[in-house]
Image 1 (cartoon, helix red, strand yellow):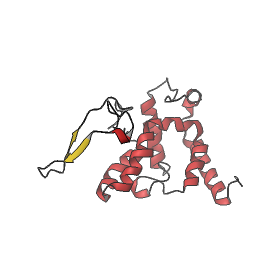
Image 2 (cartoon, rainbow, N blue to C red):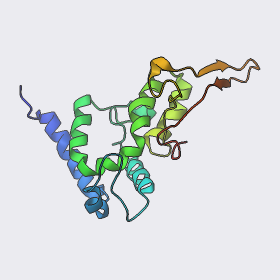
Image 3 (cartoon, one colour):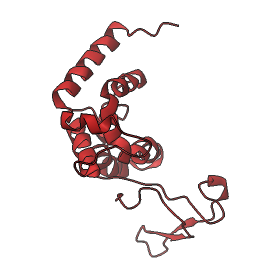
Image 4 (tube, rainbow, N blue to C red):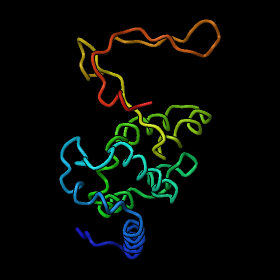
Length: 179
């Protein structure tokens, strides 16, 4: 199997590398090299603010959520370009950890199932880092096992379009940061 970049991939890699070199928050490099599981390693400033700033900068330049369609705040790039970006972003990718659930799970679910109005309203602020999302499926008897969920949502009968959610949560990772 050939793992060398095609000429198009090499051009993309060079473009990504140049943009990262010119725009990455290099003042955080030493701290990011100490990043660990669920930690950016940043202590010199608010890591959440640093992550949001990096995500916003990427979004403004078209580098956020590379595999998402442009109309939803993404870059409309191929899966391999997304991989190349991750390789080039390197340690700066740790700044995006608050967005993993939103970008990797919730956003794609919204793209698959939401109305076009909801997609256009919800996804761009998620892609740009304005919003952080969490997922809410931890229950006393089910944990995070979706097959064991008992919480349910029923559409309100008053015509408001609201949903009534009944159930019990025990924890939600990242909820304190999410919108």
